[in-house]
Amino acid sequence: MTLPPDLPVIDHHCHLSPTGEGVRAAGRFARAGGTHLFLTTQSYAPGPILRLETYREQFETTERLAKSIRTETGVVVYLAVAPYPVDLVQAAAAIGAAPALDLHRSALDLAGRWVQEGRAVALGEVGRAHFPVEPDVSAAIDEAFQYALAVARDAGCPAVVHSENLDADGMRALARLASSVAFPLGRLVKHYQRTVVPPEARSGIVPSYLARRELCAANLREDGPWFWETDFLDDPKRPGAVLDLETVPRRAKAVAEQHPEDVERLRIPFVSSVEKVYGFAPSREGSGR
Image 1 (cartoon, rainbow, N blue to C red):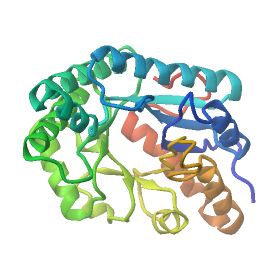
Image 2 (cartoon, rainbow, N blue to C red):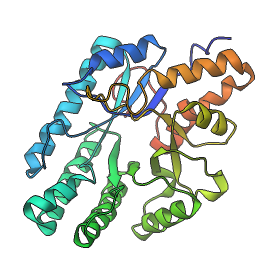
Image 3 (spheres, rainbow, N blue to C red):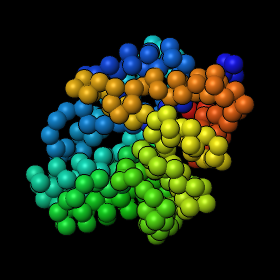
Image 4 (tube, one colour):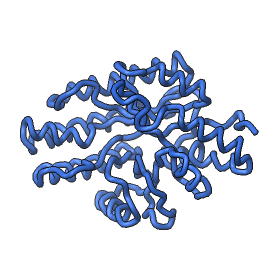
């Protein structure tokens, strides 16, 4: 059995770089059967980011990549933009925690404006460092995370969360944080989720599962919303990390070939979850807003 012709095939979280494969990787994704990418911005140069203008340039670089991908491959691209939470660690070491937090807030405000202008569909990645940091920096990161959720709330968009892998207790704690700023839990996406948490234990948080074979097999029977992602880094020093960009189309095709009775369940990560979390249906053109 083949995939239904009207079924989009979506990688919910990836990164591309002008110094990596960039558009070529998106071309491989398209040839493998992929149709839509959620492209998350990233730093394109080493070292701490100490100026708001650098974030503006970073977002614009991601936007130019998205436009080139649409033009050259036909893949539909949705942008998620925000200052990366770990940027605060490097910036705090260079200029101090308080100035670094001020810069981070300004960059989050910029990301919120991009969403309001229709240039992006989500704030991401926002959240916490996934490793121990100094107490003053940890406090600044937590404050920035709360501010990010408030910005996403006011912009009316999802927030894509970077953090350690979460179990049910971790999801409850994250839900409490989101509720403290009245952020709607159904628009809170935990990216790079590596274990299955039953729907009733997620506290309303939406998992974006790393598309490893065993994880895809485990979550396919679940009700949504949930997504599949590769978190492809497009780093020439780490080719194929975290997962190669062709992975999600391969997983979808494997379902069609090996478990044709489950093909319609692919509409959960590729259609209904997008509609529920983002508020739009995956389109065949444009930015999807």
